[in-house]
Image (cartoon, rainbow, N blue to C red; front, side, top):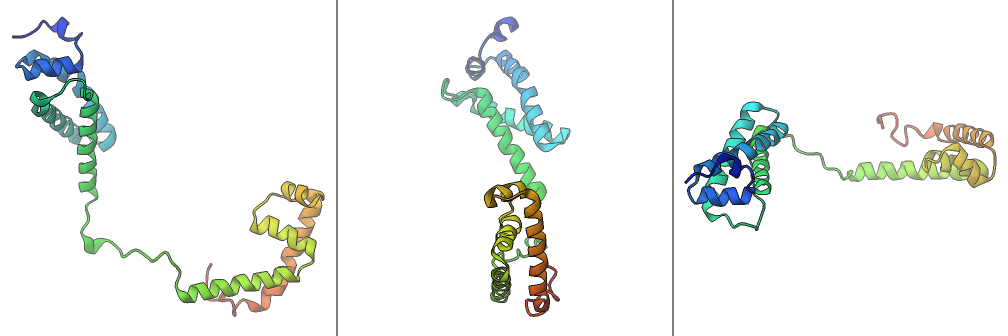
Length: 196
């Protein structure tokens, strides 16, 4: 037996589910009128396609109608359950869109550098450290703070208790000295054949 429409609109989603499970088609229409636009909106935002969103929203509602006879009031909210089903259906469709044959997927590069690369990086680090060690102490400190630690000149000035202008001078002189110390080692360190 159908309940009056104005009475149905005041009932909770759970109550409408119970009524539908007991054979009230008006309760199903009221619940669909309340939830279908929300689920369609969720699917449309996730999929970006109205046609697919309609299919997903309808499938979600069909699943809701199938579970209605076993629905246990109070365990979960109907809308929450339906949003979860909709999200899962959308995720499945998005995965199918991305499906690519395995032979079309490029082999991932090994993120761990090879032995040769590690040795080259170690040589570069050693050469840089040797050149840094050859700088006067204040220049070395300014260059390390600026170019290795990434501090800004005002921060370096505070650390070294000098003016920002003095920091600029120290780092500029230090960079020039480093360049001169490392200039003859470019080929040895692999910079002539390397863009890094």
